[in-house]
Image (cartoon, rainbow, N blue to C red):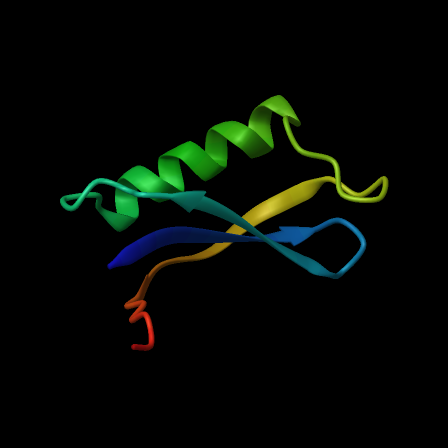
Amino acid sequence: MKRTLEITFALDDAKTKAISLLDPREDLTREEAQKWADNVIAKKAIVVKGALPTAFQKAIVRTVEEEELA
């Protein structure tokens, strides 16, 4: 099973951007994800087509099960 953490930011151009990280910890909390996102925002660590993230919107874990066809 493949797990991906997806964190969505609001940008200063009124758009949003989702960042995906592979294999998040099983016990990762929303608070930890938000703390990481807040750090990214404070340090201006991500720029998307000239726009900076201004706020954390949400964090989800997407789980995908892959099954090879016989």
